[in-house]
Amino acid sequence: MWSFAALADLIHEELNAQLDPSWVLAVEMILVGLSAIGLFALLGLVLVLMERKVSAFMQIRLGPNRVGPAGLLQTLADTLKLLVKEGITPNGVDRLMFNGAPFIAMIAAMLLLAPIAFARDFQIWDLNIGVLYVSAVSSLNVIAILMAGWSSNNKYSLLGAMRSGAQIVSYELSAGLSVLTIVVLAGSLQMSEIVASQADGWWVFKGHVPALLAFVIFLIAATAETNRAPFDLSEAESELTAGFHTEYSGMKFALFFLAEYINVFIVCAIGATLFLGGWMPLHIGHWAGFNQVMDWIPSSIWFFGKTFFLIFVIMWFRWTFPRLRIDQLLDLEWKYLLPIGMVNILLVTAVAILGWHF
Amino acid sequence: MFLKEYISDITGAVGSLLKGMRRTGYYFLHRGEAITQQYPDNRDHMGLPERFRGEVVMPHNEQNEHRCTGCTACELACPNGTIKVVTKFEVNAEGKRKKAVDRFIYHLELCTMCNLCIEACPTDAIKMAQHFEHSVYDRSQLTKILNRPESKLQDGVE
Image 1 (tube, rainbow over the protein chains, first blue to last red):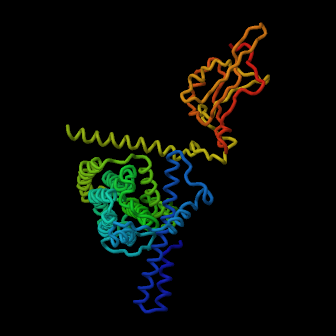
Image 2: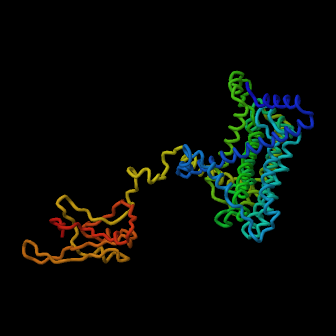
Image 3: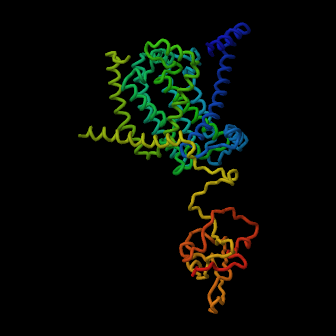
């Protein structure tokens, strides 16, 4: 079976034959960075188009269908338009922070790419505290939003940013607790080991009720952390025009827009890794024949299939539910998700200690 | 007691959310129900709703006869002076002088398609057509005379 790992090894050997080790590292870092940027650009195009099509179908519309076959080139045209648009810096803003914020947002999203296993043996950095790293770095995003909101010198931006801060700080807790349930079950913080522990079944099936509950809580918290409807208070169009990116235009706006979709991809990728087995094919216990057929499908397809399924679910949320009020949002977190998450983690500890999972 | 309420709250909320997701999921899978009209492309088979109102017309039959008696009920019903009925007196077969419509003037540029004239008409002489591409270069072209030249009142319409 073909895999990316072979390609990566080939490049590594070729470079080693040509250069000395420190240069090899530098060149490989540049290559990884370029492929990350390429992935981001591609994901931005695909996800925005997917969002528009999914929303259209859910609202009994047709969606973009004019540019290219079936509207497939619509996002390319939009990107071109954003690229050539003037990036205005308004007069009253704090220039350094205003212009820096979109890049911080992108960098925070880019850093999160490191521990994700895209396919079998294909990972940028398999660090042994992968899950901790993810939960730590994902909160960097709020700094970019606060920077943008504060430096814009605009009441809507500031309100949006403050709401976003309150929201992300709150939902970080339930996201962390639901991630912890899987850490308890898998007994490791390392992404590759968590994936390996799901070789005989995904945790969402193996972990009984607690894992399922944690999965639902994770999905809700992930939607909230990426500031998407029904938790899009930070950019609520009807009240705050566009929230923290009201004052941004052109490519700077596009970077925020892209960062939002990249964040969606990343939280879904992490959700897929923790609960749905990452690149691990669907294995059922000892059905050797069935497992072999599933193994035949490349691992990258499994990974992206699961991730896009979760992205679809999050889009489904967005185009079904109305936006919450800020007090309802905090009620949901502090009165419902957090207590349930805490009880759930006790439950899952009992399950793990007593060995009730498969 | 509190816990019972708490749990029933959660199940109720989840139930209603799933109900909403079922609806949107249904629409996602049934794309044939899309209500978007791809307008200039589907001009020939647009499928407008039955109650769509484009303009007021006066149907004529093959003998160039309409059903308008010139009673001006529509003119009175119109809220913004869109309709002006100019009447004349005709002498009928029995030698009686009778009121009839001379010119039924309809100002499309003033019309709000409120349908009140059609409801007011006692003889069903006018109705709403679905034609809606009204743009012209001169406003005077929007002032229309609805009864055709030489047209007469249909027999038996009082």
